Image (cartoon, rainbow, N blue to C red; front, side, top):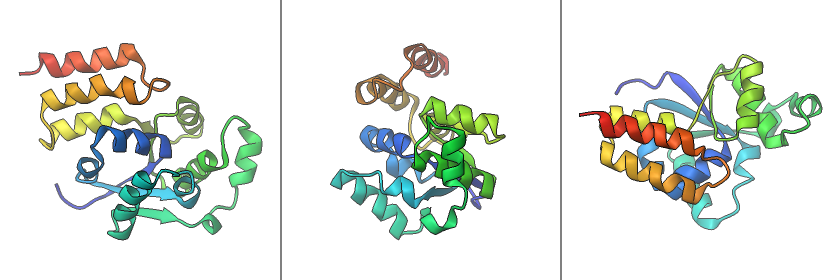
Length: 171
């Protein structure tokens, strides 16, 4: 893998899932320019999650944009009342840096899509980890089996089963 060219704006919900699945270190091996907002970082309350993220901020793998960067976060919240201030900061960040949103919040993904911002989820990260031989297909299936246990609200079972079939059928 070479120079990191594509920006990936990371939401807290998917960070929690990735940390709980134990693939945070693996994710940062993928060639993305990982960015997020200070609003997102402030949502992290558990010490183990804070420390895991702090390590990647400190080593430069995750760039955090200061709250003063954002000029229309509150206007966006007025426009999309179902989104939180941190969510709106990612909408604005994605518009500013033309990045792709990494998220597991369907409402946030839909708003971004409506505003011309592309998004991916944890399944795409797992797929890329397999494609770049960072993890094996068997491990991907284990992660997919574990995912609904750690995130029972955002894990669509039909999609999980479909993803598992892909890794089972490949040779």
